[in-house]
Structure formats: structure tokens, C-alpha cells
Length: 134
Image (cartoon, rainbow, N blue to C red; front, side, top):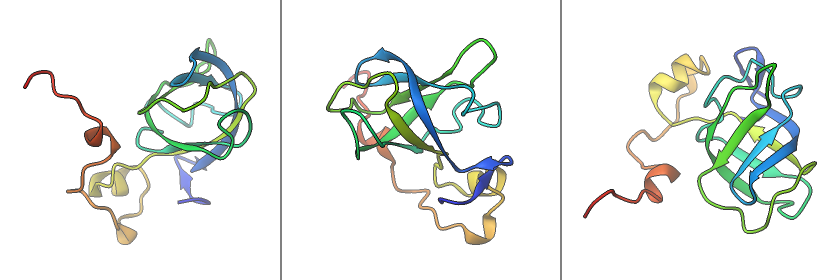
């Protein structure tokens, strides 16, 4: 999906970690680079690849993100913990997420003709799902 567009913005954006909320799972990225084109949860099911710091070269699936606003940076939450602590000024590349459904392909990416998703295969969210009761 690299090189495409979403909502008039790039599918992939490179930015810096501006704050770490949970050392290995939750961090914020600079709102100047992740602007209002990237709405809440647009990165869900997408990836973050760290290009510097302790996790340099490692890629993780994104569980959720908040929209960057004038008051605050966008917060990114990973599905699983990173093996090493994240730090302010680590650089990373965020890729807009896709849940592999036809509706997302049509609505989010306007790319129905090239749909190649697998709507019946569970994603990372189901793979690490822990039931409330047995």
C-alpha cells in the first residue's frame, strides 16, 4: 500500500515519538506531521515501523490511535508490547490500516477494483483476544 493516498494524505507518514505513556505499548506522535487528515483509528490494523531507537527495524500492528488536535498529539496504542522501551524522538513510519473488508476498500481507499483482502481470516486483534469468561 506504500505510495497510495488516503483522504488526500499519504498512506504512510514518517514522524517522531513526542511522548511515551506506556514504555512499550502507548506513545504519542507529533501532531504537526500527523495532521487532521488522519482521523481517529485510521491507523487501526495498520503498522508502525521504528526507524531509530531501541526498536529500530521492528514493526508492530496498531490497535488504535486518537486524532491529533490543536491541543494534543495523536496517541498510538500497539496490539502487543514492544520488546524494548520506546523513547521520545524515536522515529517511526505509520501506515494507514486496513481491516481487509470490501467496505473499507471502497470507502476508505476508493480501491474496490483491486480488492484482495481476506474478510474471513482473523487479524491480529482476534489472534490475541482473551475471552471475558470461559
